[in-house]
Image (cartoon, rainbow, N blue to C red; front, side, top):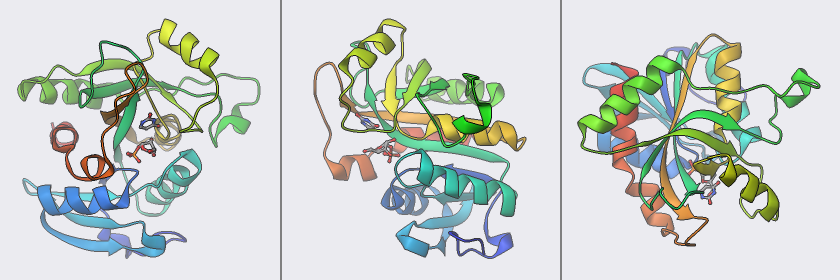
Length: 234
Ligand SMILES: O=P(O)(O)O[C@H]1O[C@H](CO)[C@@H](O)[C@H]1O
Ligand SMILES: O=c1cc[nH]c(=O)[nH]1
């Protein structure tokens, strides 16, 4: 057990999928894993371990925002020996060409600050995905007949953003989508010699103002789960 995860040491796989929503963790485990079993419910942050095509996989909720993700990712990396962490999250599209329900694969994640920012002092560190995982995820998406958007995303500290000027600058620089965890996940994985990637589905649109209901965010983003699983074992 770690401070925030109640699993026994051998109960967590080296490959961990991390949705923000603990109920998405439950849905994904029950839908895509064989013999999923609950391995964590501390604070209601559900985690399940099962197998996918014979490979052990854990799906553990991260909560919303980088401080919460940082707690779970740190404990998974330091105390449970996780080696591959793939975020499966929702996001808000920032470009007109990125449509509702499209898949976004994050090559880089820009942030104004992360829980790791203080250790870099004056340095603007560039959190980036593991290249081979990224390439495998793109191939897996294309194999499914999808055309994923691949590029930079923005990991924000706010869902209800008040910085229209910042959004505009990020859009000018081609940022595809906004979410709230990937930059810290990438930074922690790089620090601990692990692989990380964020495979996202568009649930909101910052240009058209479309938005999907909560149930859809929890239970309808199956493509990104299958892409993440396929990439992890490619
Ligand atoms: O759907 P999840 O994975 O939680 O991700 C996105 O949704 C939450 C905000 O609604 C934030 O956590 C953001 O990153
Ligand atoms: O951070 C997020 C996540 C989903 N949708 C958004 O608009 N922002």
